[in-house]
Length: 255
Image (cartoon, rainbow, N blue to C red; front, side, top):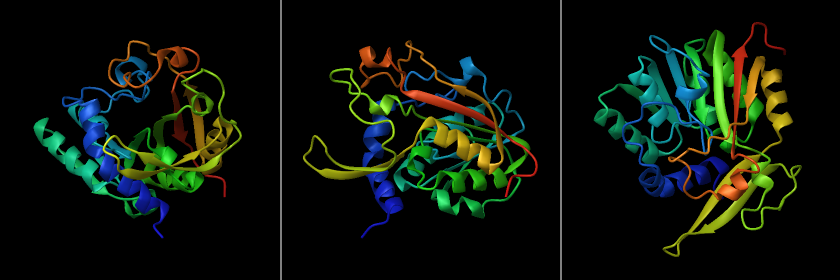
């Protein structure tokens, strides 16, 4: 039987080509936080990164790391998918920036150097973390004192809604592992896994890991032309698909 990590890796290896073709951001200039979730250029959650060390967790095709590298950051991106990283390395070369890309599961990032990074960023990746608080504790140990963690996710409320009839189709309290078999247009079947959590679960895990949560943002940028296709705007206007957390490492993490 395959582990969850292996199934997630396999899904992204299989989906990478379609995903990168669909998004097709070949000259990334800013961090895009998610569907209708706006950009770093507008939100200014990270601020100036010139000379800072940045770790991107679940970097996918590397667009965020490349954009930050263009702004002067020293970037490292990790991802579980070989295909995504292959694309990321190629894209970094095309954009004439140096980014270190490492294949790693969330469980293996503890091998990275402790207290090295000024900023950790993650865009729509932490929903694939089975044990979120353990991951937050790892990220806490990788950040320098007062280091910044900024990440975005599917908005948990959005995941309860049906895009067909715009009504709630699932319980907000049905949390944990979500697994389904997808049938793609070519007739092939693929297993998709993610982990659903309430907003309070995410917030409380951050606090338990030692972070001070500076802000939670529920953006709605209807001008989004990048992530927009595939989302029904009538539903988006009711509840935006993206939620963003900004948290700071504080001293003396609770044991």
